[in-house]
Amino acid sequence: MPPRPESLSSSQARRIALAAQGFTDPPPTGRVDRRHFRRVLGRVGLLQLDSVNVAVRAHYMPLFSRLGPYDRDALDRWAYSSGELFEYWGHEASLLPVELHPLLRWRMTRALDGETWGGVRKVAQDRPEFVAAVLDEVRRRGPLRAGAIDDGPRVRRGTMWDWSDAKKALEWLFWTGQVTPARRERFERLYDLTERVLPARVLAMPTPSEEDAHRELLVRAARHHGVGTARDLADYFRLPIIHARARLAEAVEDGRLVKAQVEGWREPAYLHPEARLPRRVRARALLSPFDPVVWERGRAQRLFAFHYRIEIYVPAPKRQWGYYVYPFLLDDRLVARVDLKADRRAGRLLVHGAWGEDDADPASTASALHEQLQAMAGWLGLDEVTVGDRGDLSGALRVAG
Image 1: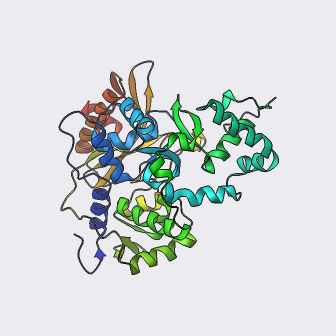
Image 2: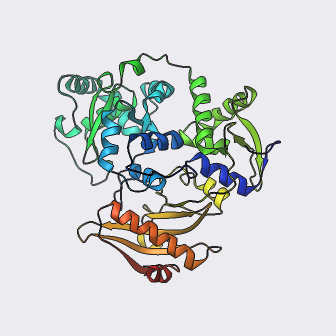
Image 3: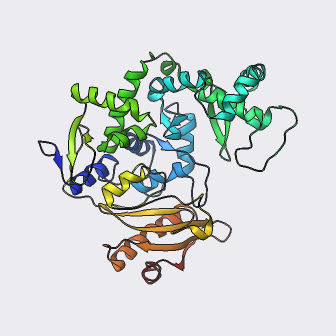
């Protein structure tokens, strides 16, 4: 257990955070199955979804980082066929335990009141009869993809958010909780009535007040993070920080959280009472840009002295590291970063660039990183790892191979 009173060194906070995220759990000794999936989900709380598929889609990676190679089809079946998970807006679009549904109904209510992004809100306001017709179509024919619903002529503007009105209507119905993705095919949502997707026992659960839901989500965020600032914890489920501070104070008063001070942190921290402080962390893991360990960039800086930003939307000439960069965790430090791409046609995992952190030993870092890259390549069905020239770690990584 963490020391009392709650004053933590930066090293202690780092180890608490990694233990909370599952990096001190014993590795699987046999075939990875749903028991292991449940264990990881219990640690991370949700799996963020993202459309980028440069190496592997974001929601697959946290389980690989913590379990090693596993069957991605088995995860898909569990996610959409078991009745244990559902898709909604958690930390962005996410796969979540169904027990969280009541805690997110406040977000659905807010969407009904107009708190969604503009295009989705506008179609609900301007074409309510069309939205009702879309819902009726899903009721009669679901699960349906957006392309299966005709909404008349469409003018394309050449952007990724150039959605048809049918897609916007479905997304509004999704935000408001009336439809839920029953599954995905080629990563495209197929929407069905929520009552046909979620178990009846979940739909029958009482709906807490928004304040109670926020408090519970913040306590859960503290469990998943181990220790974090108000902003860290609010970010986990994308809660408004202006309300989160009051709910955190209430959780401290109730004994559900413990206030703490972490060395080098300007803001006070909140510690989950069940957080573990291991003596050491022995981990080797490539982390997706959407892994909870690094998705709040300020937290990654405070915990690991690791400055990180995703450069997908940065013009290529202005990128410092690369398009899709994975931090590399070795024991309790982020020691390197690699810009990865899966060349599926050629059967290669491409390392466009590799960089070591200033305090990382190049030879030992490259050796451990090479091992993880080989494991990732095999997991993705790729035959080899090819290392490019960019980055100060690339030479050592080629030698390690």
